[in-house]
Image (tube, rainbow over all chains, first blue to last red; front, side, top):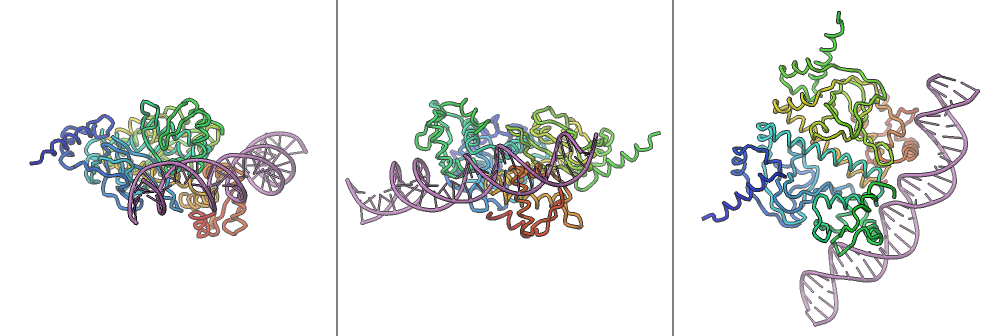
Length: 237
Length: 237
DNA sequence: CGTGGGTTTGAGTGGGCTCAAGCCCGGTGG
DNA sequence: CCACCGGGCTTGAGCCCACTCAAACCCACG
């Protein structure tokens, strides 16, 4: 009758139990309660989960795919705040701060997500101190990263920041066997992370290529000289 | 024998009970336990509470004064992340993320602070769900502000940011009866918030003065035209 | 008075932005 | 099958905001 239901359930279980999810700190009882509530749903590229300034009714747990989280500036330009991937939980900030969404989140690569209603998330935090501390750790780590990026934006040149972002993307999403960044972005998206104009990204990428630091194949970026990039990212011009 | 001890205790009580402190969410039992542990201490201008990269053994609750929280960039330039004042709690980020301090905190105006050991803070979070949620709210709000500032740094001009910062400082620290900013900063400190060179701040401040937006009396800044500043801060150069 | 930290002002430079044109490439319709 | 179209990418030219460097000033303090 429901041949795929068991599969879905086990998929969720996999997701929550995975060691890179905060939810693996839940008790097995809490976990099975949670499994009764949530259903994974697949979202296609370009779909929007929630809009900046909108009310937010819960958080999303990412089982697969990539989601782009960004703010829209005064002139309409996107500023990408982060990308979410497997194991991440998004939207929790607005739920816990009890504020409107401060970002928009859009699917970059087809994603499988579980929606977790705000009330459920808050109940879990209230009743499970370990889980609560882990959620707090998550928020605090994100805050530390944000502070770092504020400093970088204020003090580093565009070139330094671009090199840094490439390394950061390699860290988060990994490289394939040919050292190609697994996340694929348009030049404009790159510029919206770095906080610069699209043309500047293009010029700097080809400069990096000239200098043998990277190679470019369409949107694919190969990191050839990680040390060199590191050197550029920390330092002078 | 100890004529000032009761005073200190009641001072702490005042501090924790104050509605702008997270600690007023504690039960009276928890509160009295906490009062037994902590002692307020006065720090003079220029003293450092903790250093970026150092181990952090607890958080500080601010009873009075102003503390400057900053990161040090690659070339030694400060980037001011925030100022803490009465009711704020600082250092909790590193405690809860279980990381080394990501900022340095230095006293800007003589301050009275209570040190709260990490273990105590974590115990309170574990045992009091309401307090825990409030701490989480704090972190999440800070995160939202950080995201906003990332966007501003990436997209706004120095002039827009300076106007914004002046308004923000007025919001946080208030104005006296003559519309003078209650927080007093050097030009260099202002530049280390805005993320620019000291000379740029100086030039823009005198431009603002020319245009009747502000007045300057040494380090004192009078806000004459808040609407005008708002207009500048959101928009085009 | 001299010394030093902070402030101010000027001059010059360049990083990075804007504007504009052309290219590439995949998709769509005649 | 080709022509056309549109979105993204690339490159060039020019300009301006904001940085750097340097000199002078102010003033509190010893």
